[in-house]
Length: 272
Image (tube, rainbow, N blue to C red):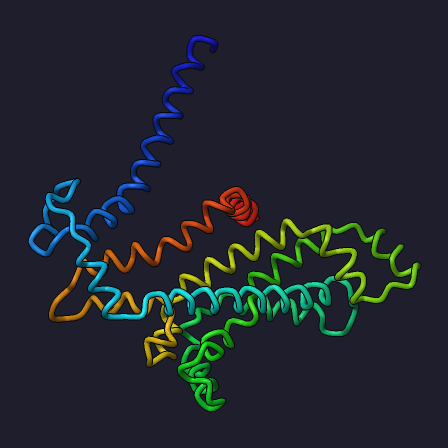
């Protein structure tokens, strides 16, 4: 076994290196494609012969990239905050309070997780349109204020919290709000942070609903703007790659700053 362990270690590290290369190649190809001209974009060269920034110039002239990135951040932050707020209150009520029909409510809530968003997209659109929130950030955020995934995840965390501590807090005269805010949340903040990261990533990648709601590019997230360079007549791949590269930079910076928390969040909820 001692003789085989270096070989096994080498094979494991080799497999990890291979997977890293496979994951990095699309990103590298995106960057170098953004530096190629139209005649070179479909070549298999790994380096542009004559690097050009004309694709970036054209992309910034065709759409308000900075404004749309700001919209994506604002929408993602609002969705994340509202989902965490509603999920904390709902999960605490389901775990802590005893009332008639609690099991039925939990079952119906769990079943709603199986319904795809496309099945309720039209009723949501009619509701948002009747409220006059069409082509607005609030209209994009409103259908995602509540997340069944977030509620069920926090429900498990609340169930694992020691009930003895809650009973002791009740004896000391703490109400439900104080128990939630001063006792439970500080002790499960790592799980809440992980859930917030997952919610933020899902909100950032949302495409179908914002495309249906928004009409003006000034009110759209960056994912909608990228569609501008793909149409039935001409596909401007160089400009598309340049705009995609710029749109990836903010989320890449966030990943570099919070990479440990992001990996922990995927491990945590992947195991669940």
